Length: 351
View 1 (cartoon, rainbow, N blue to C red):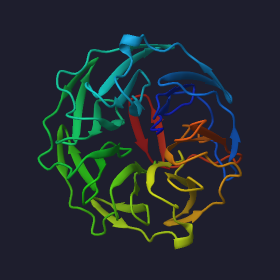
View 2: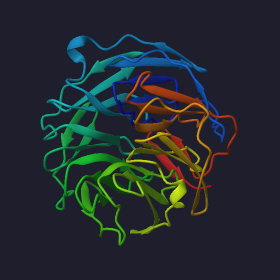
View 3: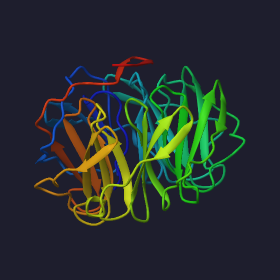
């Protein structure tokens, strides 16, 4: 099981083997350094929950004919929470739902589909574009949305070097990062209108196949989880240059392949889901220093595929491959919001 992506609230949660996503809400931003597990019901292939406090109430699934085809690997809500996009195995490789309250209606498939299994999916911050990382060249497919119509853009002139594993937009929408399984393992595009121009590769590359990628909320850091030690690579951005930060101390590295990665909403914490116990490693950031926190008292039950914070920072969910397949932690320390204010369809950066 993998668990990918959330947008800016935690009122509705969708889980599809490999995903969790939450819609916009008005809860305060909280977070912390103590992580306490709480129970959750067993998961089915596609399950949608409505959250109230720490209680998850299952909603009716879409009609069987409208369910994703195959195993779902990623999901993402549009910034205004009107659309839920799911990447999966088997054609059409993506499925897009329009949400009205707690009803999810499948939209017509795009005329041009991704070329292979959808591994990662992400909306641009303004909701105009949808990017899918997938197997089979061109490895990245980007759509422009107009209403409920999704039109494929021309492929970038320079493509990722291998199967796309994950994709992430910078918070201001200027950059798109794709993690993939062939060197250089990360490809970063700068965006102007509908043109995606590949930047020069960082001088220091991840050590292995890119599995997950995430921007810090202020857009100043780009983190990649990957195969091969140190399993985690963090870059600091200066204009269009990405400089690798020093790795955490060897004893503080993730214990196995980094499969997924997520920043807390205030950018203070970075969680890495990985193989090998403790399966989740959480760092606290101070400037450019990342200090490993003590592992939670209750660990995920098996190899972790991804992690995601609730948009208010109060919960951290970890997806893993042994029952109960998802472990959710509640944090205990109130954290101030820094770096970003979001309203529907717009991102404003600043302190």
